[in-house]
Image 1 (spheres, one colour):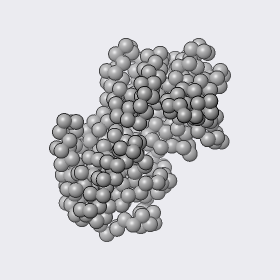
Image 2 (cartoon, helix red, strand yellow):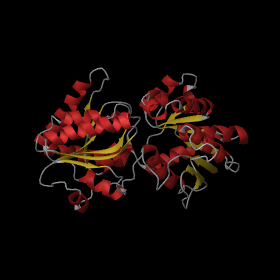
Image 3 (cartoon, rainbow, N blue to C red):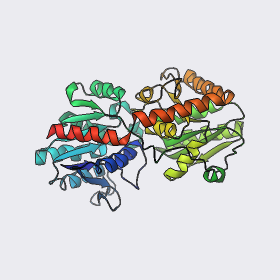
Amino acid sequence: MRVGLLTREYPPEVYGGAGVHVDFLVQHLRQIPGVDVDVSCMGAERPDARAFAEQDSRFPDGNAALHVLSTDIAMTAHCGEADIVHSHTWYANMAGHLAAMLNDIPHVVSAHSLEPQRPWKAEQLGGGYRLSSWAERTGFLGADAVIAVSRGMAVDVLGAYPEIDEERVHVIYNGIDAQVYHHDSDTDVVEALGIDLSRPYVAFVGRITRQKGVPHLLRAGLRFDPEVQIVLLAGAADTPELKAETDGGIAALQGSRDGVVVVSEMLPRESVRQVLSHALAFLCPSVYEPLGIVNLEAMACETAVVASAVGGIPEVVADGETGLLVPYTPDDTARFEAGLADRVNQLVRDPGLARRLGEAGRARAVSSFDWASIAHETADLYRSLL
């Protein structure tokens, strides 16, 4: 079985959860006898995938979404030998859709997020958001199967696209490689970042996007116990407006307390693992999250999670067992921010609870979210469509 896997992100160019998913899924699919995976991705050349430039020189000033659609057509032209195509995110959905039509082969879509659930992307893409929404909708409605990364995501898929037959939606979770993500006792990276190991710290890892709720975290941080440090491994903001808002929130936080560490460049996986390992807790204040692979990464590092109870997060973080969840409603964000602060301060007062949550999180990550099992589930779905 020859699988044409279509994605924007692929190592070493990975910036989000979908890219992490593709990285580990491909590794484990390639270990299954009889499964041959050809990866087509976007960006610079790399050794184990076919890469396609994301800039079309014919219209250098065109909307970014136009460049993606042009790249999709180029990717489609190289799918002729595939028995089945599997696309990830709207960036590649149209390539999968066209390849399925052109070659009369099945198309599987993985739903990592949904454009209708992310209206703030109009800030970033302008009219391109209408194009990205169209591409996603067309790919999903035409797909032979839609993989939802959580039960919550399956509900969202059917809510956004009620035309899809429920039988075509399959829940296959994101996973974690517990050999890659584990507690790291080394401290060289943590110390080099200026984190004081004699004091507890909480950590955030993620992009600065509306989805991740960083402004809520910054306002909640004003109420954290003065002893706790706040470590933000935060990538570039999606828009200048969000950057200005975030920069203002960071400045206010740094003006009210010490121990605020901000790292803007993307750190290697091993460095992130060490930061997670020594944190009192990992914070996930997302306002929308289909699953949240980074929660699994923190759990595998034996770190307690404090997260919003949205999307697929409650299916990963067991409240009171592997972490602490905070209800989120968009019409009462002040209550949400106060809840985040209360949960953090609870763990500052009771570090033993944080340790117990972290240990239970590791056990849950290993037992319920193993990538090898997830890859076999995915391969079984492929076979059922051929």
